Image 1 (cartoon, rainbow, N blue to C red):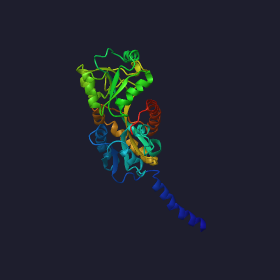
Image 2: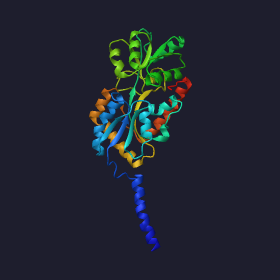
Image 3: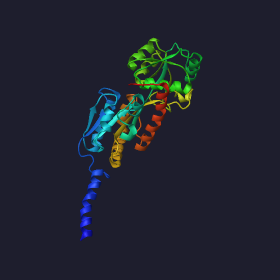
Image 4: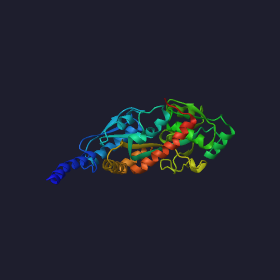
Length: 321
């Protein structure tokens, strides 16, 4: 009788462990899901709203976009949410770079978040004013070394791709190019076109019309391989600086300790939506390249990126406090 009572008493507890732990995630999801991202109107918001209908259909529950502004707010919101798969984060590489820029970030990107997939990447374009006598990355490096401290680059906000891409370029080449600070990339590009600054790592969508009109000269793209967004343009790595890569990354996360069954379900559905022909076409038109790798690959990507950018930020003494 003791043995029978023990088995009968323990069996429901075992079921409770399976259900509460979400080992199989068989009943997930059974209510709406919050997809937390940055302010309305930006590239992240656009992509999140593009994905939401497909995720809703695949998951069988409404995916609600929740805009929480910039900085740490959307990241902290998800990092502190219950790990049940109902609060997700769609954010840029700032998720794992901000802790290097701030004295005390209120979260740890590796400890507090579970990677789902790298959704998309966006290249930058290395452009110069036409008055600068260079037509390749190699020539730009040579000119900068011959004229230390005389060339300058325009960049938007601290820690943005327009800022960190040239700092990586400086670190890898040893050149001295002066940073000219702007509050955003728009005014920076205007001054580049006017000839007030000479170099910029700009977004393809914003700079492409000016390249075609001859107002600025494009030298290379910052992806590791040639970008289908910029056909015919060589990479920085292949045209004078081997190993160089700098992209804007957008990824999907859940809170740490979210059950793996739920992570895998979210991964499958997100990757499926990313590669829908109509979604992929709109992403490319918006200036980003769809990815959709595994949670493990995304986690390794984050750790590698943290090593690279952490060193650049520390060595250059960059702070955003």
